[in-house]
Length: 376
Image (cartoon, helix red, strand yellow):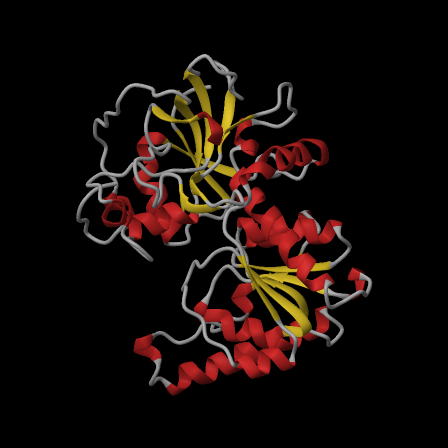
């Protein structure tokens, strides 16, 4: 991505020659195979919540920080490395780490001098390459969706741990709800494994059917068309406010039905400001709001007194802990906690601008959009 654009996500992308220097010690030359289209790529192209070019002080940024690559060459400097030439690996999106192994800056996003997967070749530190298991029964496309699953793993375990500090009851008596998206889908599968009732919104026939096939109660978002807060232009529209009140009331009745009138024990809300008041209103006593994304707004407000009296806990996480990556991969391999076969949609490299626009405008029904760069 580069310089000014006309406002559409696809126009922020430019096909050009990108050069980088020789491999330094501890770096690998790779060729991307499949890239996963993540929300952070959409944010980068929209220049919101930050302009990554300005933040990094670079005129041109190659985005794309999750996907599968083939290792072409390694400059090990005479040391043992976790990867070898020919390995197929997943890129862990860690740019700058804190002392606990969490990401302060994301690779190929706001971390300077990092080169993403929207390139025919790239180079990266071998420490952020995690080999795919030999002889795996899962396809490369299934593995390329890992970012949503690893993020969900971290967020779920933190949220569940917080919930358990206050509630010792059987999870079967409690509801975990998600507003939608690939991370929420993966997280609800973990909640289901833990014994919770699980439900999630979806806005298309395809997604409703997909959730049902995977044991998640689908909530058709189209039945509540005015749940989101009115836009600035709609704030004086009384009919719009009345329609929202009606949608909110009916949504609340559904939550009561699904939760036996107790509300949501753990609410996965990666949407943000337009729905946050409904998230809080739907929450059970001693409930948890957990988030690892901000698709439609970063700034939130709530009444601290009301939230304290209700003993609500708000959990915020970002990415996951780098050193946990091999264990999460091994859990996926052993337990089949991975994108269902055929659930992804893949765009050719030349169609990446189209993918960007389709994602931004909600035209993709799959939770796992990706792009193909080089042949396997």
